[in-house]
Each structure stands twice: as C-alpha cells, then as structure tokens.
Length: 310
Ligand SMILES: [Fe+2]
Image 1 (cartoon, rainbow, N blue to C red):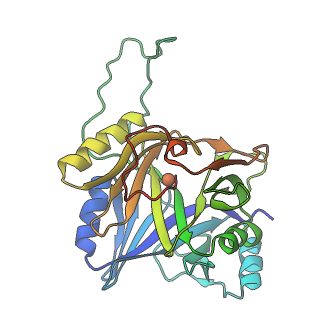
Image 2: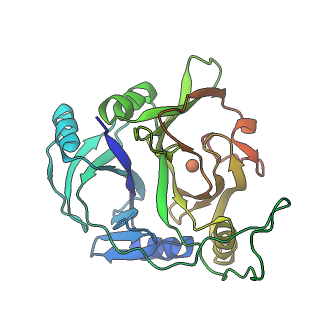
C-alpha cells in the first residue's frame, strides 16, 4: 500500500476570523474561500487550501488533512479504522474519512479534492557563491513584502500517546520513520519524524512528526517559502507588522530546513521554512539525543516557550 502521499492542510478554531486572516495574509497566505463560519487560505501552489480556521469560541488546534492518491487506500484505511468514507462538505470537495489519532487529534483522509491554478510568482533567486558566479549581468532585487508561501510542508503533532500515535501514522496510514529523537534512553523515543512512503521517489523528510507531550495538539505547522530571500523578506515584514516572533532564524539538523517560527494571534506556532531534506526508500533512520544543540546547526538559542521539537 502507498497510504498517505502528503499533507493538504492544518485545521484550527479561533474566535475571530478577521484577526486570523490578517495575520495569515501577513504570513504569506492568500484567501481561497471565506464562509460565514470558516476561513480557507491557500499558498501559491495548486492546493485548494493549506490552512483552515473554523470559528470557535475558544482558540484551539483541531487537526490535519492528509492526501491519498489512491481511492482504494482511502476505502481500505477507513474500513480498518471503522470510519465512513463520505463526500466532503468543504470547499474543494472530494471524498474524505474523518479519523481521530490516539492523542485525540482529528485526521481528515482526503482523496479527489479540486486543485487550483498556481499563482504567478517570480523565479527563485539564483545565488552567486565563492566557487561559482551563476548570476551574471542581472541585479538581485526581490521585492519587499510578505513571504510567498508555496505549500504546507509538515505538522508536528504532540500528545501523551506517543507510541500509539507513531503506530497510527505508520501501521495504519503507511508512513515511514525518517529519524527519531530520545530524551535519556536511546531506546525510548520522544520524537519521530515521518515521511510518506513514496518508494524510490523523493519526498519531504517529514510530513508529520509525532512528539511526546503532556497535552494533545499541533505543536506547529510549517509552510515553504519561495526561496531563502523570501523567508528573510517575510521575517522583516512580519516584524514590521508587529507580530510575535518565536524562534529563528536558523537551520535545523533533522530535516535541515532553514526555519523561522512565529505565533499567530491565538498563540499557535507557524513556521516558515525552505531547503528541507528530501528522502526516499534508501533513507536509513537515525536516532539522536534531544538537546538544544541537536535542534539546529545554527540559530539563536531556543526560547523557553519553544518545546524541543524540530
Ligand atoms: Fe518544523
């Protein structure tokens, strides 16, 4: 079985959709659909939406939407989980099965959703380096403004049911372990980075990560910017808008992304990232200690609010 082939969106609830949309627009997302009770934001890529906010009295993280390319996979996994396959009642349509992972996080399995025309953006910048000048006779002038988020890359899900959650994503949904982290005992993981089972084709180092935590929820969700300068431009744009910076800029070790973490107005942590590792079935999982030094190759020190996950 192929199982899950990607992440489509993260889903939150918030008491003020206007406030959320203002932040997400500054973060580099674009409105796809807004209804009376929900906000669907897209990137510049073809996904119909990559961030959902439903109105709710109390802000909370709800779950993730995961893509299946094979309808039979959807039917089979839903049957194993005892969930119904039904037409989605949300923009983009398609079929879905709504599951709950062992930490109580909602997992929408999705097949056949509509895609959109990608939005026009500039080409990623060509960078000169010390060995080779690749940009000859043209000037480097990316425009100031928000980042151009292309797509969602991953979500880190936390909760007390760590082993059961890893089993849910690997055994039921078909994902593979990329790397593990441990606190004290190398045999006892506290973080597992999971990639989609894409065979020989390359896929993101982690589409989902599971982290052991006291409370269940989305630790953070991560969105890919156009290029390195676009991440930096977005950083200064968000700063100029007065938003709350969380951690970065730095480069992770596991996954290797250049990262920049922000808080939305309701305290959810969102990451801009670029230049993450791609893995395939030749990848062999590693297991490293979880300490500040293994969170990044370079960065400012993690702040106390930054739970130790990548
Ligand atoms: Fe991340």
